[in-house]
Length: 125
Image (tube, rainbow, N blue to C red; front, side, top):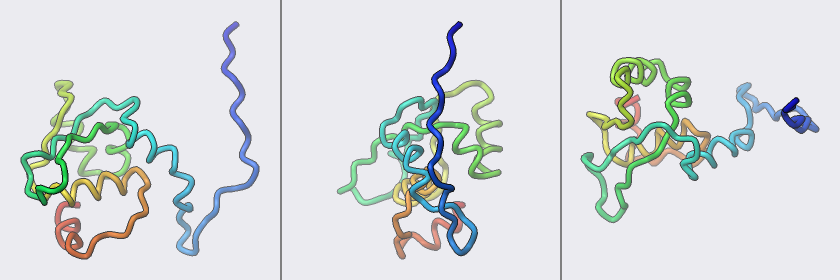
């Protein structure tokens, strides 16, 4: 029989912050798979969006299930746009910087929201 190896047991419960959210370090593995691009099944092409040309606008390799679980809007777009198994997506609004921050946040990034992106991220989200 091919048994799966036992998962390591957590030695302590996850930290919960005062607003009852899980502490960010619990998402370190999720952020790492975004960074590595491992197991990704979707390319998000942001090259057509506006943004500082000093930042390379490389496509982001992401995971449909992660994006769909983070937002009802993204879930609807994933179900509609990707029903024919397209493996790439180009957002039709927002800037390169806004989408990079949103995607990074979905994967557990805890970097502060840049002030210059605040209104735009609220509109895009």
